[in-house]
Structure formats: structure tokens, C-alpha cells
Length: 309
Image 1 (cartoon, rainbow, N blue to C red):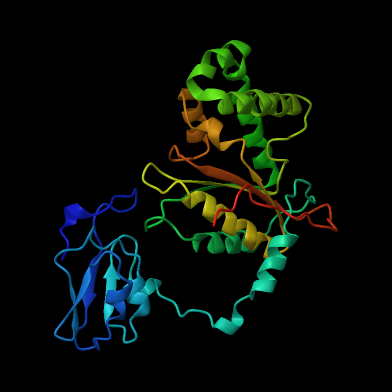
Image 2: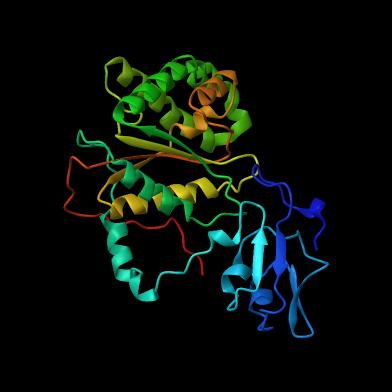
């Protein structure tokens, strides 16, 4: 068995998971060995055994337990147990490519919502779908902060706007001139042409009673990681949430302007603490949800910047 000190840490797990093998059930097919990329399993004399030389020790991805045809393997630890297994839906019940593409193409960024709450069971369905997103390392270190109801969305927007008002030096002419040699031309252009106008739009909008931060959305969810998580994890989970919401009849919109501005400094930490945001996160994303008040009739073709073969 892998030594405990070999475990890859997350905020939820500091030790390797334990692998249990029922030798009587094992038929020696080797499927579990073929899918374990940690080399935690080996075939010896026609039976599976736990390896003495894994790369990291079991991270509880669950592949071996999920693929075993006889149920001979159990994983315990790192937030995983046999009770977490479920039978895969049939291939016939899954959406085909055309259906998925249609769903993707129908989704547009919605910022105009009906004065209607998102029902709790719809919210839970969105979260369930988002929790199925792939991750860099299990168990998931993605956390969610939920603003349920337009009143909560506006309260957060108001606090965020007040926070920005105390940070206007961050986009002042003297500060941008000072920082340009250090962060380069691209960042300088981004701050002058996007971040600075964004500060003004957010704060002046709130002064006029117009919430351009999260648009008084009936539901907003902030997906963020931890110091241990893969930076992509919260973004992928947020994407899954948008796809699920579209399938459930909701409109969605990604809000990229909040996350980067609440990561550093004492006041940012105070804002995070007020809203129960547990960690600073390299990447994170706010997504707003609600029943659309507008209906789009046409889509727009998108393209990538480069494709190199």
C-alpha cells in the first residue's frame, strides 16, 4: 500500500485513499490495472493486488471501482466510498451530437430576467449537474457561494460597488503609469480600456440605482477554487451549470469582472468573509441565472483565434 505521506493534498483530503480488494470476487480481467494511471494496482498470479510503488498513492478517482465487472474493488477515503457508485445511464438516453450542439447554439448571455424566482428544485438540479464536472484532482476543491433571490444579488452588488469606490486609486492615471513597466503593454491596455471603464460603469450605475454588476439576477452562483485546486476546475463547473440551466429553460450569463477584484487586500478579504467565500482562488467565475425576459431569434457564429495542426 502507498505510504500516507505520498498523498496529494487538497483542502478536503490530506491522505491517500484505501483500496480494498475481495480476492474471491476478482476474476483477474485486469481492467482496473489498465485504467489506474497511478499504478496503484498490479496483477499477480491472475489476481489484482495493491502496488508497493504507486506514483502518488490512491487519489480516489474511482476508475477501478467503476470499471470492475464483479464489484471486487472498494475505495474508501478522500470523500469517496462504494455508496457513491451509480449505474451509468444508457447510451440511448444520452443526447446525441446534434441535440448538444443545438443546446449550445441556443444559449446566449442573458442579462434581462423576468421578476420570477428560480425554484429550489431547479437550483438543486443545476448544482447536481455542475458537481459532475471533471476536475484536476479529486475530491473537488470547488466551492460555491449562492445568492438566492434578486434582493441578495443587489445586496452583494451594492457591497461590491462600495468596495470598488474605495479602490479607485487602482485605476488612477498615476497608478497605471507607475505599473506599466512592470506588467507590460497588454495588461496596460486591458486596465486602461476595460478595467477602468468597468469601475466607472459599476459604481456610477449603482449610484443611479441601476445594477450593472449582476443585473439583480434571481440567482447568482460564484464558483471558486482553493490554493490546492486546478485553476480550470471552477470554470469547468460553472460551464456545466450554464449548460444545465439552458436545458432547464433558464437564461445565464458569465460575469468575469468580479472575481479578479476580490482576491487581494484586506478589504477584499473582508468582503469574502462577509459572504462566506472561504478561499482566495486563482480562477473563479460568477454565473447569473433566471427566466429570460427577452427572446433571441438568431444565433451568431463564433470562431477560435487560431487552430494549428
